[in-house]
Length: 250
Image (cartoon, rainbow, N blue to C red; front, side):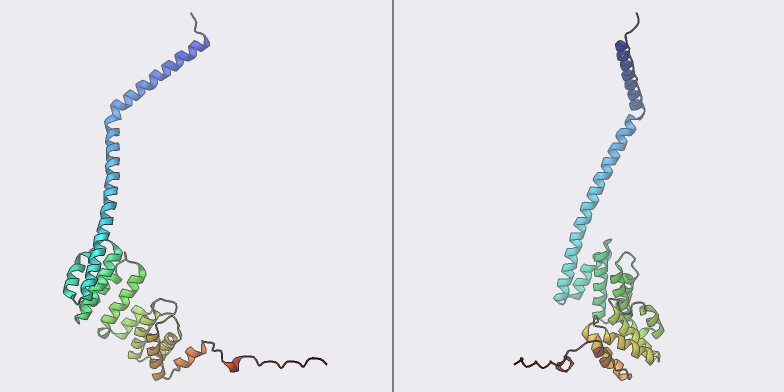
């Protein structure tokens, strides 16, 4: 007996469902364990990531407390205790904490007149590519200042010249060191020019500007006058003369 179109459609659908069921069973028999294993591994990896994040957050809190404890010890004139507290933070994998700890270690060494060791600590920060560039630039300046007397003037000039330019945040500090190096190498003209630029730059700390004015003046450069020329001073004489009022018409 021939099947009607409706019965034929139902039969085909039943066969299709049975085929899909067989395919699913075959897939499960072949790959079921691997699928379960992959799901378990994915869940374990996700749990591990969450745990890692939690541990990093906890570690950051602990390292922050250690830094504060070190600063408190320095405030209480206990540099040895501060150095001991800073040691684990200086080995941290968190860039900011590591840089701060090493810079503080260097300052402690400077306070003990251990300039060479302090310069080496500053050099570690300056060479640390994981640290933000402003930190590295500051560490380079501090390193150079710590070992200044042991360096040849040209080494100082080459090292700090990229920072000793107007517009750089450390122009005043780096520029002053470079200008003195110019002076020590016999290039008074370059030293005078650089001291004059520093004196005229109103973004440079006032103490550095005043020293630069004095140094430039000793070399025949009137940096004070140049700086004043960049400031427009309003005086009564510079104001336009008042025009006389006309008498009212009679």
